Length: 299
Ligand SMILES: C[S@@+](CC[C@H](N)C(=O)[O-])C[C@H]1O[C@@H](n2cnc3c(N)ncnc32)[C@H](O)[C@@H]1O
Image (cartoon, rainbow, N blue to C red; front, top):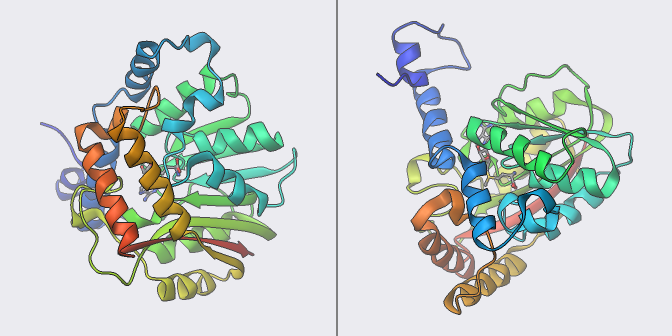
């Protein structure tokens, strides 16, 4: 029998508590299995890279950027976000929903800081550690499995935090932002880059964060303002990048149509649905069914 969080709670193997109601745990399981794909993600990524003639012993972060920066506009968007965080080599940064660890490694490489990533999906945490070893950055990044709504860190532990394309899988966004605020030092910056519900109608599925609506929970622009200020943050900047996001996906569709795909893409873990997800994202962005927005906040 495969034990899911839901069955463990139901059979009282694990105690029921306020962070662990059955529906919520079942949702967590669904989100993690959406992302975990076939399991050993690092092997799948290594396989694609070898097929393209890459030597795993000589990889750079640039070789991984098309797979490990799992969000719209990739590494460029991470660098833009990072500029708002006031980082130095002494900074201790938290990446909430760190995925395969690309954004964390980009920060380490650019600023020499230390980054801790936390992610719900164990397979992503395992792969993030392996990929960090490939590019020689293991000593400055650490990844651990955990839930953004209940962070396993002490109050005021971090100098800065970011979260990129994560909250769209989470119903209790109030807990995510309250937890982010709790683990940050006074005056620290928190950058949020997320996909929001647009005004152009319902999202077309599948999309990279969900194959169907039950695990997709997009906030509106209005809701984001009250969620962030309600958690005690001051919003110091807000940028809507929907136009650039649309152009980024249109360029990806054009490359795919010409067969000019990079050595490794999100298809390595999203599987054969990926081309349909890309087509849907072009429509979702063009119709403004979704928007991409960045918030820079201060404790
Ligand atoms: C689209 S990926 C983005 C990953 C990474 N931020 C990046 O930009 O490369 C979304 C990530 O959010 C994680 N996630 C979803 N719900 C979460 C939760 N409640 N707590 C922590 N991570 C979560 C998923 O496991 C996945 O790795």
